[in-house]
Image (cartoon, rainbow, N blue to C red; front, side, top):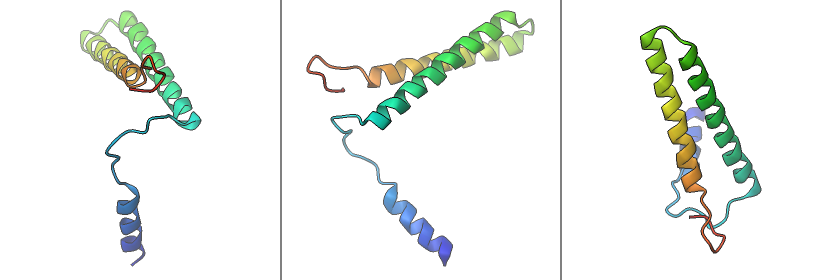
Length: 89
């Protein structure tokens, strides 16, 4: 019974937004900054370790991880780009 109630509440609280908000809250902005920092740090670390690695398979996996985190960083940056009127895209 308890599990059914939790599932019902979960479905109600996980509704998808049809349109993003026109403003980002301070808390959301701090989280976006954290995500960018994490991805930039992971990019740098993967790149550093790939350069140090002598095992081709591991080096390739690290290079792929570097590229993935770099893409994530760029994607977050694109989503947070500010238009001339100061509103988020």
